[in-house]
Length: 237
Image (cartoon, rainbow, N blue to C red; front, side, top):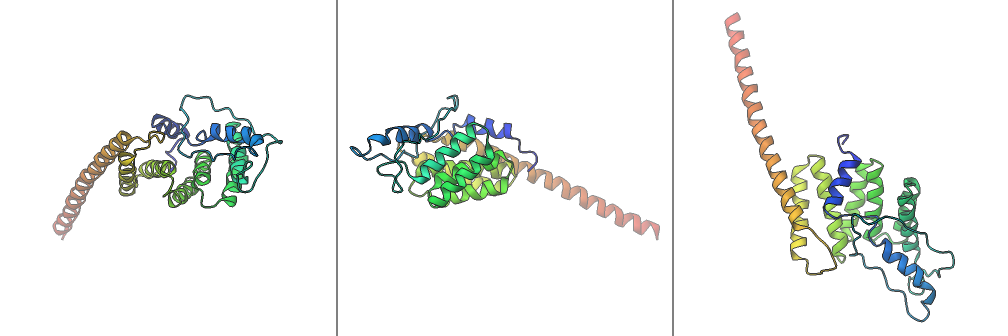
């Protein structure tokens, strides 16, 4: 895994429009800011499908102290979204330890919400903790059946990670699942990229064929070397 650089990850993800920490951030800011008037109108849950442009500035403010808090997230911001928001602010400030702690706190509040696991996976990736990042995204995928945007992000991240680990069968499975989901998507507010999956599937297939060719050449060389050794042993007798 040493050959996986943060720069290469950022390039791949931004190129496909998959910015995780920024997603939902502005929506949650609106939720927190409008919570003061929640008694007149219940606060709406921020849509998980919202995407932030890759070129948009990632500047966030924390939840104001006067914002109403509500464990149910009806008349104020819930502990889960407050922890996510705190983590987002820490991430943008490059305080990755605090971001990780906040995302883990969010997961404790709502362990079955895929967004907390997605956020945690990204900060773990930044810290080069690839095994735990993969586990976080697998948890997100497990809980994302009713959240197509989160499911798409989890599949994308897992497929990319498997490809970079050279785990090509797993990468193929994930990219195919992502492509199927993207092709079936009819929600215009949820951005998915089937062309990206198609391209990655083609490249993974090419690499697998190349490895097969290398394997055949290697086997032939090893066979010839073995036969040569046997001939030399006979000649020496």
